[in-house]
Length: 210
Image (tube, rainbow, N blue to C red; front, side, top):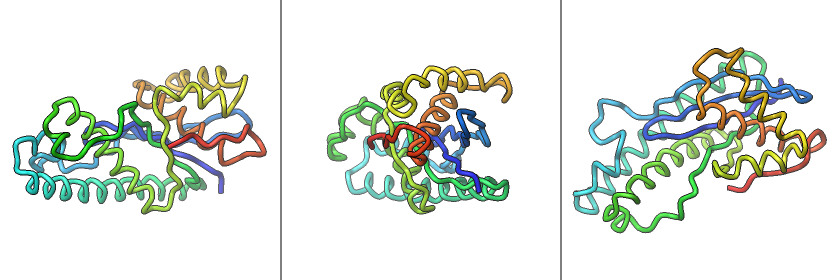
């Protein structure tokens, strides 16, 4: 089987996922899709921290725990489908990467709920963690790259060839068809970086930091 990797750019309740493979400097997008990991009809699922902002702390914790379990379950289901379809085509997912924010580690829940800015940050981290748990359960190696570190990671992985990798990824929309969004481009770049790290003989060895 040929090796493949997936990149995930996460939003509230969903993630833009791009799966790709690469061989001798030629990247190929194998799949791209929007994975929804909430029940849109479930009250407070899309913005769980906003939903519990005014609740008593224990009630807030219960709601967040329920939402986390459901989002993780849905992420496992969706990613299993992606992995199975790729395997049927002769590709094995050997790596995955989640794009991270540049925010500082979150304080305790009570402090988070006292700050509207922290609530937004917490919700982004909430859904990133759901994807991370799902990938770990599927035993797909997962790492994280901060979005603003992508360019530096590309240079460490590909050296002087990094600008060419950028150009090829940006141009993929011409063959894939519109829209080829910023989310998809960054997820694809992150995926090709971690895929390069699985082939140390062919590329400069580099494992992006989590």
